Amino acid sequence: MKISILYSSKTGKTERVAKLIEEGVKRSGNIEVKTMNLDAVDKKFLQESEGIIFGTPTYYANISWEMKKWIDESSEFNLEGKLGAAFSTANSIAGGSDIALLTILNHLMVKGMLVYSGGVAFGKPKTHLGYVHINEIQENEDENARIFGERIANKVKQIF
Image (cartoon, rainbow, N blue to C red; front, side):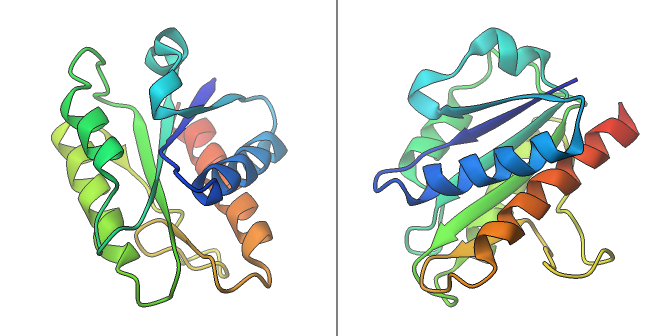
């Protein structure tokens, strides 16, 4: 099984969180994972992935223009039936990350993906729509990112 983690990052914050999520996926075991910036996507690996996690910085309560452009131009990939999840980074808790996550999830559903947030049933971190990493809060945030990755990997194994 394979999981791709796709992200856009200008300052390195979203890239850092993507790598933490990758660590969590690896903790689940028996899943090959690759973390890729949108400008360097391994097309073969992505197409073979059962799960894809999308990550974006939050800009004015929205996704990055790079993520929007990639989604708009990704018609060469058949994403139907794959498990999709999303995470975002923001500078403050009121930065609009929930709207950015909903934007990604809407696009994933249009592409026929199954979407999974990681849920609240497992306790903390509670991920209603996906994982949000608030840059001004550091306590437990790194571990929360790993837990999110592990939850997505476990769901991929459960479904596929």
